[in-house]
Amino acid sequence: MLLESIWFFLWGLLWAVYFMTDGFDLGIGSLLPFLGKTEEDRRVMVNATGPLWDGNQVWLLSAGGVTFAAFPRVYAVMFSSLYSALMLILFALILRGVAFEFRGKVDGPGWRKLWDACIFIGSFAPALLFGVAFANIFQGIPIDQKGVYQGTLFTLLNPYGLIGGVLFVLLFLVHGALWLSAKTEGELQTRAASAAAKIWPVEVAVAVVFLATSFFTTRLYANYLANPLLFAVILLTVAALFGIRVFLAKKAFFKAWFASALTIVGATFYGVIGLFPNMFPSSMNPAWSLTAHNASSTQLTLKIMLVVVIIFVPIVLAYQAWAYNLFKTKVTLEDLAY
Image (cartoon, rainbow, N blue to C red; front, side):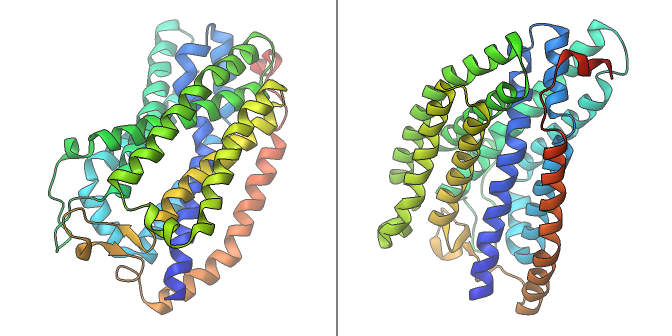
């Protein structure tokens, strides 16, 4: 029971770290048509994510790998029931990666406009679909006793799922705008900071709607009501969310970005804590839900994986910290010459 619980929260942590890191990449890509007024602006925006985006996606691979290795039944049911949504996310992420590499290969406005559109689609679609997918997991997926999905892609596009999708998009838009505010200068920095300030109230409003709707359409609050101390997670997340606005007003952009990062991590754990021990709840019958206890690998597998994680995750964290430190300076027009 203990190992399954540990791996459940490690699984949630990997998703939280992925959303925190790749979230600003997805946000910047989604903002590209709106903040990139000139070719120089767009190149600066791409360069602000260029050295880091592929490293950030390591956490997505890790989250998927942990799901496969630690909770194989969840992996099997998830990738069959959410197959269409997950394939759309995968294709969009591939499109984004190709666009980053191909955009500068030909010096022509039509060529660049094509790949800029691909960057936008490859950023906006995953942000939206991740939110839709996780919101549906929170409220329960229509799976039967055999784990067979009784629905279609459009079943996932229900009101609660769409609210979750919009919330994820807004979280990532603010996260990306704040990263640009911290990494750029001049007019682009001003526009990015203004965008973050304008999107933030909408983010707060949608977050309130999502929290309220979750109370009526999900069982996420059962664990919180059983242990009121867990509400500290929600309160800390709310404090981080309002910290964004405070630091924005002070033009402390890196601090605002860290507050946004904490907001995303807190929002992820809000759902993870509310789900426990469920990982893939059935909306048809709670008894058919997949949990950390009935869908996990063997104890030996979990023990071996825990040793591997203890050894290699610090190495990955150290490497990523080194990469962020290496590219911590602002991206300027002078950098475009290289």
